[in-house]
Amino acid sequence: MLYQSTRGKTAVCASQAIVMGLAPDGGLFVPQEFPQVRPEQFYGLTYPQTAKKILELYLTDYDPDFLESAVQEVYGAGFDGKAGRLCRVRKNTYALELWHGPTRAFKDYALQLMPRLLVKAKENLGVTAATKILAATSGDTGKAALEGYAGLEGIRIAVFYPQEGTSEVQRLQMVTQCGDNVQVYAVRGNFDDAQTAVKQVFADRTLEQQLAEKNETLSSANSINWGRLVPQIVYYFYAYSQLVSSGRVRSGQRISFCVPTGNFGDILAGYYAMRMGLPIKKLICASNQNNVLTDFIRTGVYDTRRAFYKTSSPSMDILVSSNLERLLYHITQDSVQTAQWMHELSEKGVYRIPQDILAEIQQVFACGCADDVQTQQEIRSTWQENGYLSDTHTAVALHTARSAVPEQEPCVVLSTADPYKFPRAVLCAIAGGAPEDEFEAMQLLHEKTGVPIPSCLAKLPKQPVRFSKVLGKEDVRAAALEL
Ligand SMILES: *Cc1c(COP(=O)(O)O)cnc(C)c1O
Image 1 (cartoon, protein in one colour):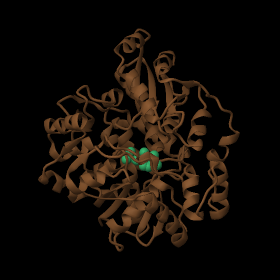
Image 2: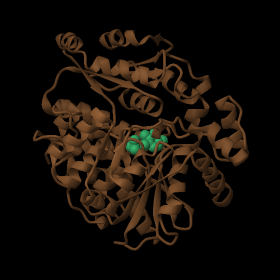
Image 3: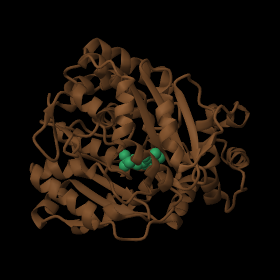
Image 4: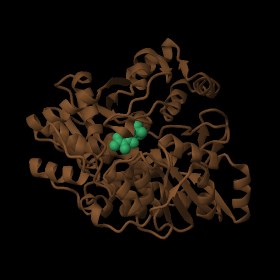
């Protein structure tokens, strides 16, 4: 299997796509074809077995024995035996709980596996340089990346979070991280300040040269790397198999998936599953108040010239959904056109696709959004009427699914975070108020609902803090050099 850029003709193998991250022309790597499978090939398989079967179709230059042991390590014990767990929420609506991994957010599915894929890719290609991963984070990604890269051979990682930007749970998750190859810094300012500082380091050619002399290279942990996307295809197949095994869906019956969306990675993995042969009726793109994608799927105009809202589902507070570029390429098969739209986006903040392309997108994708009030109402009614406790991101999708899918049709909602990651917002929704202190809110939420607090979150206030350095934006470069 070869991969090519969405913006040009570069074609490389999977190992190269994973080591490079971004194509040299600025495009994203996409597979040149969609491997074809039948859903029944996956019935009765465990999560790791399903993962192995999917991954080996895409990562054809990887040793199958390596893939086998990687998926066993990552998705076996690492997810408490609950990888891909499916729960019935109401009549025909199911929650695919993707938060049983080590950091309690769905990003673990990709960020537990991708670091191993990167180490192996370097080995496959004979790359000897040490890799330094730099990540600016507003919350979930930082911890999931730290947990994924900690302890790996030939890799070091530094995470930069905004001093005034993360929740207390998220901050403690990062500053208590174990491992000899990790560093965590607070950066004075907000997320944009941290992100801009890290971007400048990536663009610094002098630094690149200085690192090269030490046989070191920089790499990023962000979600446009193919190695982060491919692991996410697996759980669509696994969810379908479970619904067939339990008799809730006939083999071959088409079902819908509703996905809380930010960077368009998670939902795009569903598109790959569909193109591979999974019977999917609709992929429903659920947004919070930052509903650029809702407007795009309705009108064909992608317009970022609008207010940015800080919502109760912060991991979806995104105006530029990078992975949409991959969908545009697959639908049009036209790298010149795709590059043109991306150019317009960066120059003018807006682009428009023609009606026939929009119609093709609408055949597969539906959309909807929920503001914070609707999100709160959804958490409350799902708890009161169905006894199911959901986090804010999942609630955006549960709300969207209500109007986007007819009641009698099966719909799987991707549940992307543990409710205890956002304890204040969730407690507010079901109790009408919450204390300032997040750990107090956790305790109260537990007393009210009886849902157990995951031990990795409960013990955070007692863990030793390993990292307390605060940097100015101008210090990020030096931190990268000395990492
Ligand atoms: C990252 C994230 C999302 C959005 O996923 P994308 O792949 O960026 O669309 C949704 N929910 C949670 C909890 C996340 O961390």
